[in-house]
Amino acid sequence: MADTRPILFFDSGVGGLSVLAPTRTLLPQAPLVYAADSAGFPYGTRSEAEIAARVPALLGRLAERYRPRLIVIACNTASTIALAHVRAALDVPIVGTVPAIKPAAALSRTRVIGVLGTDATVRQPYVDKLAAEFAADCTVIRHGSAELVQLAEAKLRGESLDPARFRTVLDGLFGQPGGERIDVVVNACTHFPLVEEELDAAAPRPVRFIDGGPGIARRIAHLTGGQDWPGMPAPGIAVFTRLDAAAQTLAPAFARYGLERIEAL
Image (tube, rainbow, N blue to C red; front, side, top):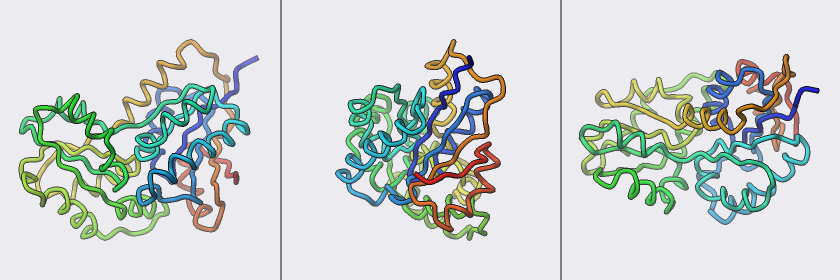
């Protein structure tokens, strides 16, 4: 009997698709479940206490329903706040998502890197720790943007996007003291790679945008190495904590990622 247990991806919204996509490329036969906490969206403006309580509880319910072989917290905010709580609560391998500061520091020539995330992520001590450990010789400039999360969600719904809104977001990063020397920007929210093309066009000069998606996919492949997969996996499942009209409009976009079934938690 083939092992039909899925890999479960979790985010507040659509951002985790930027992690699911490279994973699907590496593991094309893997059954996939994508869980979006639409009832709690967005996480970036919630308190740490709310997220630390909400995420383990939801993942407990999801693990009970879908029996995943591995859970990916495909959300920087949830990972930097709740990863330890989830690992303590669940007897399932957990992969988190953290800002790609280490590879950014390796790439930077100017030794000034930008970290673009949600307000909740960029203020976390975990980001301080990453910067101290992997970018001690760099200036790390941070900017939090809730609007960019909304823009990524709007893009997945097929809405038109005003380029000026991306320029305004990036002004908050590049306009800080030393921002004129940034040469690498970390997309420290999984939503942001979904609008990387728009960000690149809005940047005041050529810079390199990087994110952790491909590295996380390689980690998932390593942790599941040698495991059995179905010969023909079932269509992927997208599950929402609030399955309303807004969630339903995302169905075509999710189908493009192989998530053909929509369910409510």
